[in-house]
Every structure is written in structure tokens, then in C-alpha cells.
Image 1 (cartoon, each protein chain N blue to C red):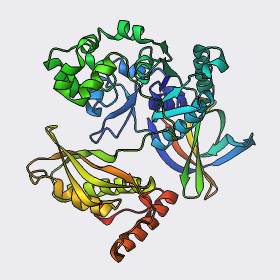
Image 2: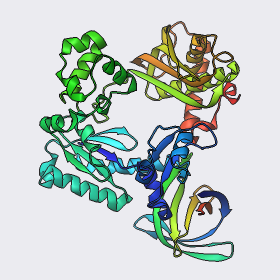
Image 3: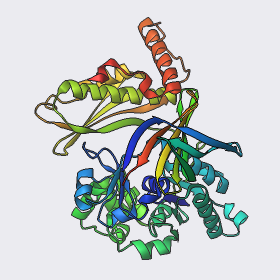
Image 4: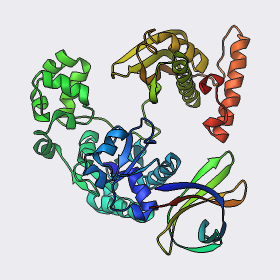
Length: 82
Length: 385
């Protein structure tokens, strides 16, 4: 099931073909390599956009990363726990 | 052509979280409250779960199902991407819901060789870009196309002409016909019509005598003869009414909470009317009690309006007194009909009613805030109960 989170996270992102792609992130002292972005979408908060990424790491763990343009910060917004 | 995404919300969740693949997934409201199934994966459907089913019943049928509340914003975003894909394959696209659309492909198929090639290419693009599958019906009418898309799910393609329709559907129960629900089915059953073929065999006049104008429509659709056109945003007929309704999380017996919900619904209807420059004359209230008995009451206003306050004041007076304490309320709805286009966005009272003028300024300011920051940025005090 999804577990809602709201934790800041350090993310390394690649800008490619006018798109932002998170490639790696550090959370709780551990570094996760993103093997696949399984989904991405945007939501609006006023004039700002919030970018959401559904990602899977090398060990098939699921995370939802969110980049808030207004605050210029990344958070982990969801994880999937069996 | 009708395109229907396969278990859209559940498929998006499965795409995002690969661990869900092959498992029964139900997307819907919070199961702790009274909610319904929005959609479910095909694995869940094997247990008898389907869209619109109460969540409690779905959990009983499939206790091992993974229930997800889902993210409507993510689904709407995916829907807009779908729309851009559809527009590559036809200039006339009529979105039918967040996960369905009609495409007029008359002539377009020539660019792709055949209609079948067009579909194969479109399906491939949807799969590549979104990781999703869809089912498609191709037919000379919207009705047949819609019926066809439901035939070979998931990832199906069905091409139907009227003869195929007769062969495939005439033996099926009459409620398999698009637009025929439980209530019409029961009425048809009462006069001895159980299958689509039996309905098609009835004379128009006989059906008209039983069902009025709807009888003629039933006769036409049962023969697969509808003449509905695919409309894009430029040719879409104008709205005849606008409404909002909600099934409550629990039955309401407190009249103040009922009024509070009616206020919220009136505000939503009014906002939508202002957004599309409509004013309406008739207010209708719909109330369903805990025993599923539904009543509707309407009242016409002296002057058409797009003001939530006026709609609310009219709607609340239409709620019969016994609802609430004596008859717990399960569902509430507010509808505005007899709509007309507002000639001027600031069309006001000719006699210079300053109170209305001020209300209009307030609405305009609130609408601007909501356009920019979302509907929840400003809430009416009366909806906070």
C-alpha cells in the first residue's frame, strides 16, 4: 500500500529534451539509483508547477518524488510498502 | 471510432508501481467511509468487482484486493496527454469522459492505409508514451462504435456494421444497450421486452405510447440506427443544464449539514455557469434517502442567474421538510436548467441594483482566486459545518 510521506530529499536530476529527469536521490543516508521513471505529471499551485515522478529504483522499490517550483525543493511524497 | 482506455485509473497505478501488476487493484474512495469503486484491474473484475460498486461490497468479494485512493490530478493530466495523441489521428475528437473519446475518422484512415492500421498505430503510440492499453470500436455510428469498444477488452479492436450488431447483440439483455439503465430495463421487462432484438422488433408507435419521446429513441438505438455526430469543442451543442451531486460519506439527519451541502453544491454549479458564461432560470434539487428513494423538485426564477446565493436560497426551500431527522439523506444534487448565454459578462440589473453589483464583484474576485490557486482557496463559511 501507499504510505504518504513529506520528507525532504536530495535529488540529482538530468535536463534532457526540455524535460527534467530525476536520476538519483539520497534519503535517510542512503543513495538510490533510479532505474525507471514509471510515470510523471504536473499539478498547478497558482502560477507555479509541482512536478511529480513515480520512480522505481534498482531493487524495484517504488517512490514518488515531487519537485515544488515555488520552493525549489524535492520531497518524497509516497513510498510503496508491501 | 470509440476509444475506451482499459481500467484507466488502475492501469495508471499499475504502471507507476510495477509491484501491482497481476494483482487485484481497486481504485476508489477511502474504504473507511462510504465510497464506491472508481475502477478496478481485470484481476479484481474476475471476483465480480466493477465500477460504481460500493467499496464495502467490493472488499467482501475480493478481500485480497489492494485498494488505492488514487490521485485525480494525475489521472486528469494523463487524460490531457491522451487527448493530444487522439488529435494526431483525427481532427474531430469528442472527449466523452476522462478515459473515453469518440474520434471521427471519416477520410483519416486513408493517411494510414486502412482504419485498422490507424488504430494499430494509435494503440502503439499510447502504449509507448503512456504504458497503457485501450480498446477500440469502429463503426458507422457512435452507438455501434461505443458498443464495439466494449466487446474485446482489454486491448481489443472491434469493427462493426449494422449486420454485425444484429448478429452479436440481438440476443443480449436489453440493458447491454448503451443508455439503457436499470430503471428502463425494468420498464421494458414489464412489457415483455428482454433482449435488444425484441426491442428492435417493436413498432415505434408502440414504444412511444409506453415511453414517450424516449420510446422513439429506444427503437432507433436498438436497430443501431442512431445519427449522433462526433462533436469537437467547436461544434459541441450548447449545454442544456449544469448540475453537481454528491453521495454523502454517511447519511445526514442534521438539517444544517444538509443545507451546508446544498450551499456547497450551489456554489459549484454557479461557478461553472460563470466560467462558461451561462445564466439559468430553473433550479432543481435532487434528494435521495437512505432507502434509495429519490425525489426531485424544481422552481423557476423570475430572472435567470449565475449567483450561488440565489441558487442556494431557492434550492434549500425545495427540500421537503421530512428529510433530515425523519428521512436520513444519502445523496444531494443541485441542477440549473433553461440555460442561456450571458450576453455581456457583466450584465447587471438595469435598475442599478448595487447589492447585486457588489455580489458580482465579489464573485469575480473569488473566481479569479480560484482560477489561480484552486477551488479550495476560498470557501463559503456556511460550507464549513
